[in-house]
Image 1 (cartoon, helix red, strand yellow):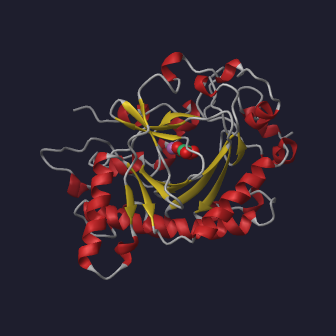
Image 2: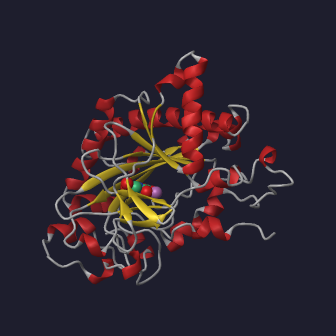
Amino acid sequence: MTTLDHDWPEPIVRVQSLSESGCPLLPSRYIKPPTDRPSASAVTTALNIPIIDVHAFNLDQPELRATVLAQVSDACRNWGFFQIVNHGIRPELLDDVRRAWYDFFHLPVESKQGYANNPRTYEGYGSRLGVQKGAILDWSDYFFLHYLPPRLKDHNKWPAQPLSLGDLIEEYGEEVVKLGARLLKLLSLNLGLHQAYLQNAFGGEDVGACLRVNYYPKCPQPELTLGLSSHSDPGGLTLLLPDDRVAGLQVRKDDNWITVKPARHAIIVNVGDQVQVLSNTIYKSVEHRVIVNSDKERVSLAFFYNPKSNIPIGPIKELVTPDKPALYSPMTFDEYRVYIRMRGPRGKSQVESLKSPK
Ligand code: OGA
Ligand code: NI
């Protein structure tokens, strides 16, 4: 339909269509090599990522604030992932925005093709990440849009249906941006920096923010594939709204995968590669992936709170010491994200490959 479609190395197939076709066999393009399949390494459901009640951070009570700071510090150092509750975003808004995105993905595929995206901007309706011809694909469709900077926000590129969706994205975006800014304060304080430090390092008022809404349709052979392959998030911080009725996200902890059990109305927060670089690896971005299942579909909203895209991001000078020399050379986020956009999700290979030679 759109000429831009041709920028992908081969015709795009919507996972929704494959799922709705009712075929009992997973198409071979989605069959992962045995070592990448969900069962290839130990999976633990007994553990969960930390759940932190952040309400107290807004109160004028130093002791309670100190407790929240300590919990966030521990989660950032030992997990790279945590869930926050009492974060201040209205539960109804979370339910409404998630419901509206389900409604969007339930529209017939044909009515969404007008939003088909291309690998130059990734904006719009997509079904793959990476442009390598013949790549094994993930079992998901998605919608990607820009929220900040204002110059990149374009309502004409957002779904026109369901009618409520535009307003909901606006309202949700505003709330999540505020939350991202508050989290950066916590992280700055925990790194021994002024509370505005990371926000300034991200470009001050000029941060970037974008939303990737993932749709994981029911899958006929979920044990052979992944909804999203293992990766770390390239950006700053990710704030993920999961569906608290359907598990799917798995986080790597040593040699195990931990299936996240979302708390009701929680937001899952994780450290991205840019925070790993800025913190000179005091905080590490952590690998995660998504498993799918045969009887439940799932939608998640991944909101990426990113540095301004054209400023150099390198280790913060206060965190570089004779014992801990700078591990990375500065690079802009625009340069950085080319990798995942070309190669697709590949564990932590990018950020690992960037370590400066000693
Ligand atoms: C992502 C992501 C996890 C999920 O979009 O980067 O990791 O649960 N999503 O959908
Ligand atoms: Ni991710």
